[in-house]
Image (cartoon, rainbow, N blue to C red; front, side, top):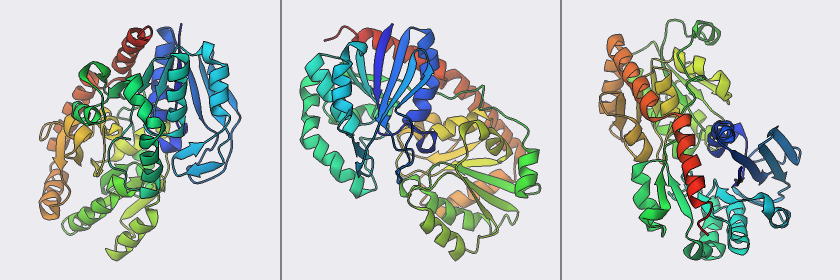
Length: 390
């Protein structure tokens, strides 16, 4: 059994990211002889002080340890009990795997790796790219200038979820031998086309053309650009409705102002957070799923939509541009040419056959390249490779 200590500032479905990845990988890895222990903050909410129990056992080889964290700088959550606990229990750790670049949890992982000679793996989860919140960026810059220097000596292994992320990681100091391309996956047992008539009826969308967005309502996710585009689409498609699924990432008030500005109050539905298991009906009822993120290393939402046989439009950046084959499984856009993009959306909404063809090809692409089983096998191989590297 290989014991992997996974470090992350948060471990809750409401913040997605590492949580969704680990929750999918851990059960598969357990079958392959990998024991997963999560070390994280006790805060449930990003902007709150809600607490959970210190210890939670998901299964015999999947455990969660949560440490009280009262000093916080946005995503940089500190806990003075974390490092002593890791050092005391280092015999139960074979590999340190950080699921957050430049976080307090990763900083502690660096120390454990150095002092106790443990191999270190880092999944940046977008942490290398520009962060739109400078209150979050400042502590990360401090981390780079202090404990982060240890990376130069430890030479950690990095996981790149897209090929376009590889040169970005290289700029951070890693070489080819320490970067491993392992795309995320999607759970096709959960994300599949299902009957959505009941949901449509509940939301009053039985006779509407439905555009769907799923993700946090944050500046970096580009929801404001989607509102601009949708207001233009409405000029031709009076029956179009926009459904926005996701929790507030600090940008909801701005979105509500834009909705009111464009007189879209009756045309935009804000559902709030919807759990993963309850998302398939939302994808299934959509005619088109749009993901206009300004910064996105991967874009799991796109894979989820494609697994539900839905056509997608995503940003022409990093992950989305690799996941989507432009014109075949969906389309990519810079979301700046609003008239051009609006015309594309309008033409798609008028062509059910085209929408179905795009959705089917997207589904086939997900099955071939983006499954958690493939992802887990690659993680397992990497863990075996680095186990005796130090």
